[in-house]
Each structure stands twice: as structure tokens, then as C-alpha cells.
Length: 566
Figure 1 (cartoon, rainbow, N blue to C red):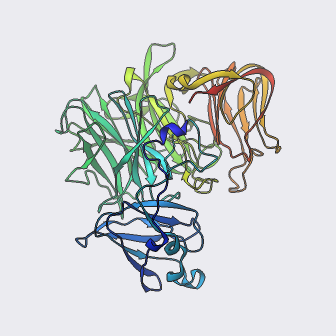
Figure 2 (figure 1 turned 30 degrees about the vertical axis):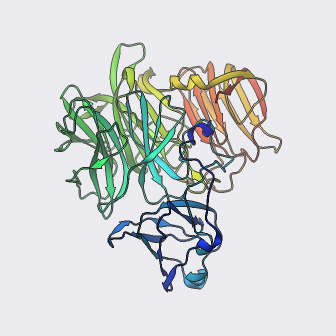
């Protein structure tokens, strides 16, 4: 499946002969400069993940600094390469931060021996754990989904991206587009860092009524500019979201709060205004605007409500139908790190009412509700302008406790499957229902007898159930449903590679809010997502088996295995 998503930027790596090996000018114990050859498209930077970050200042032919990425340039060994686009007359001014007594002389670093020019950059998959049918970046680090919107039959997904390595750094908005929420085409970078700051999380909206003055259906992006302080900036697109231009009066909103970020916008029909939610410490602040440029503070929510064991991040809010009632309530999403039910990051939510000015939670302050009870479900946000009134969510499938340590190199992190959201009631409380989006059904292939590393299981549950995925190495994942307690669990303590983090080997447990009749389980190289067929339970966990699970055992139920269509 990933083969289809990589065609845009995949090519065989072409490098010049050894005579083109770069020749830096070493200016001191930690300083070197390199004038780039003209007529080349890329210089391929060798990365060593254990190395300290080097500050690479890109100086243009007018002697102006155009970019300042931090790159773990190889000192001893090369783990992989990342491309830096070459423009005529550029010079790299590089400051290394390692201790010379440990790293040796700058002139002897491995990066100079391996750094080469190329007219293409090879993005062929070199990772056995890269998913077959989940979105990932072609290379580099990815975390929060950002700037998600639907327009003209296309789903746009921006994301927090480091194009210069597979660790968190150099935050930029990467960009992919899809017509079916499964097959993703990579697009050029959406929004890059500037003098105001690097580009943290945010959202996009379709300005149907030209309220901002950039034309009907212009795409308006809001994001956090992160530098000495966190401020909110705006960009706009008049070509359907293919390219963005930054607002000339950025930043738009400022604050003296240290954690002030992740703007999420939506149109509120009742007040005929745009609403912006911002994560501010351990609260969500609500702003309103008629023109997307002038904003008024309305209210705050969160003090004493829900879980406060970490910083609140990545808000979202939406009206959702309540099953079987004909009613509609509002749900406010709050991603928190740390503080998740099994450690690290997770998504909590609150249900209540919103009048365009203030959100009122219907539950008692001490009640905490989790959207997903797995370990690897974070930064949940929804697409703007989704068709048919749907609220489609995408999440980052990892956990801040070990996201930078998982055993991949070419890329780090994937997005979980898209999910449609609604509400249901149980025991006097209202909860969020989570269902794999209908687009996921289209990739279900034919029934098959054997388990593979990219497949779907449909399990008909008959009372208490135990399901085991195993391989010939003795590695296994055990899932259990306790009919009496009405809980579902997934134990990955012996799932395969776990030693990269003490926080990884764990069993996660979820309430099922009623009897569990059927499960849908999606397996994809390095992830397992389990959903109750009625949408009342979801659990997302990463796994890294040393060989694919090939053995399936079920007690208390019957499992049908479906292949995945290319």
C-alpha cells in the first residue's frame, strides 16, 4: 500500500563521483563553512542519531540567512541521509555542539566523507516496520496532525515534521493529500519556519464566505509560532491549499503565558463567528472573530475538570449527535501529556454545551473520559469541512514516552486509521463513540486462512474471550474480553522488541460500556488497532515483532481474517 503513496517523490538515488566529495573550510574547534556547488538540486546530509545537533545556517547569495535547521551531522557513522535543497550561491555555516575531547577534530567527521550532491533523493521504503495502509512521512520525524481540511474531493493532512532527521526538531508543516483517507500523496512543504519562530500545531478552515478577504473558499491556516514565546500566526491559500502565504501582520494573537499554542478553529452558526480554541497551560481558552484577523477573548474552560497530570494540548470542539435520542451535544477534545491512563500522552474529552461564548461540561469535575485506551493515541483533531456533516478524526500513533526511541530510522511515527466520531449514553454519562471511517471498508480484501502482517480480523465474541497473535519466536500479543467486568485488554509485554523503553511493555485495559459482541482488529506491520463493532471501545497500540505474527488462537469466539487491498 505504501508503494502507491511514494510514487511522487521516489527515485533511484543518483550521486556524483567521489571527486565531488565536499571540501569544507574548518574555522575552529566547532565551526566549519561549506560553499555549495551551483547546478545541483540537493546536498545529501549524513545523519547520526547519537550525535549532538549541529546548527546549520543556510546563507544565500545576498548574504542573508534563509534557513537555520538543526541537524545531527554524522561524527562517526552514518545512519541515513536527509536532503537539503541547493540554491545558487548558497553557503552552509555550521556550528557543532559536541565536546571535541569526545568527538575529535571537526575535519575528521564522517559527514564530510559521506556528504554528496544528488539530483534526486531516494525515498524507497527501507523500513520493515513502515505501515502498509497508514499515513507516514516519506522520511523524517512526524508528530501531531495539523491543518486538516476537506475540499473538492480531497482530504488534506498537514503534520508536525522534521525534514532534517527522525528526531523531534525543526518543526515544519509537512503536507499530504488523499481522495480516500487511505492512499496519501506527499506534497511540498506547507509552512516553514521564519523569523517569528518554528511552526507548531494548528488548524486550517475553508473560508466559504470570504470573511478574511482572500476570496471565497480560501484556505486559512492558523499555527503557533514558537520562539522565545509562543504566539499565533496566520497564513492563507488561494489555490485550494497547495501553497500558503503568510499574513503580513503576524503574529495575530500574543500572550504572556509560557504554554500558549495549538489554535483550532471552526465556524459557529449561532453567533455567525469563527471560534478559536487555544491550549493555555492546563486550560482551554476560547476566542471569537468575524474576520479571522481581529480576535476577542470569550472564556476559559478546564480548571479542576478532568485530568491535570500534564500540559493540555491540541484542542478541538464540535457538535455531535447522541445515538437514539435525536439530541446533539458538544464535545471538547483535550490532548494531555503526560497523564494518560497508562502513562505518557493520551486524549481526554468533555461533553456538554457551547453557546458561542462558553463551554459548560455536563459531568462532575472529577470525571475523566478517555477517547482511546491504548498507549499510542495522541493529538486527536478533526478535519474541517468534512462532507455530510461528518466529524473525522486523525491521531498521532505514538507516545511521548518513547516516540524518539522506537526501532525505525528512515521515518518515525505514523497516523492511526481515520475515525468517525459520535456520542452514546451509558450509566447516566455521555461518551464518545469511535468507529473506523467508512473509507477503511474499501481496503478489506478477500478472506484468507493465514495471518499476515497487514490484515483485518473480525471477531465474533461469545462471552469471555481470549485472542492471541504469535510468531515462531515466541513473541505474542494477548487480547482478552472479560464478560463479567465488561473490559477489554491488550497485553504487549512479550510482543517483540520492547527494550528501547521501560514504558513500552504494558497491558492496556478499556471499559466496553456493555457486552462486547464483535471486534474489528487492524494489524499493520507495527500497530494493532482494536475497535468494538458498535464503536463503544477503541484501543491503539504499537508493536515491533522480530518477525510477523503468523499464529492466531481464539478462545470464546470466532475470527475471520481479511486481506488488505492494494
